[in-house]
Amino acid sequence: MKSATKKLSAEIAETLATKFESVAAGSKKIKKSIEKAAAKLAKKVAKFEKENLKAKAKEAKELEKKASGKGEKKGKKEKKKEKTAKLAALVAAATTKAPVATPAKVVTPVKSSAPKTTARASVKSPAANPVTAAPVQTDENNG
Image (tube, rainbow, N blue to C red; front, side):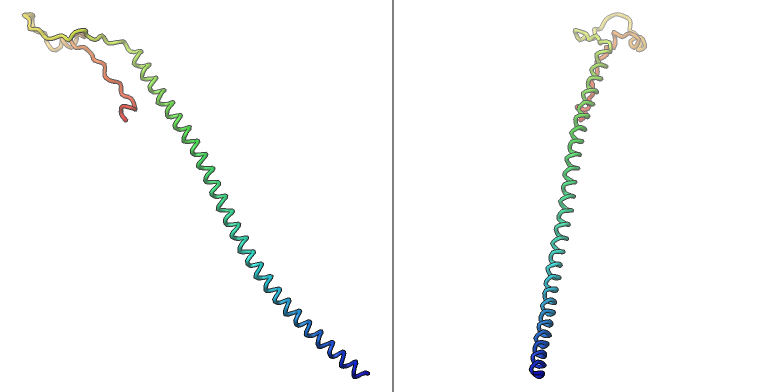
């Protein structure tokens, strides 16, 4: 009986040893497959984070564009207000000046026997040199 017990115990020991080895080998395979899955998952996570950062950057740029677009609209409105203010100032300046009398008829020089006047005398008399209004220049005319 002792020999049968020894044989049985030897067989049990062998089967246990092989089972341990197979479990160890299986655990190594499992470990490798877990490592592969973890690597794939890490790649996917890195890709997701990268895409997320890109999306946030794009969103920030869009917000900046919207903000700057509103700023440009305000700038255009301010420019328009400035132009109208300048125009109003020019109109006000033109209306505050004394109106210049324009002759109804164009006077043609007539030869007369009257004594000739000097150049200084003609400069002193305002009726001899009628003043014509110069056209007002605006930003639109300079354009």
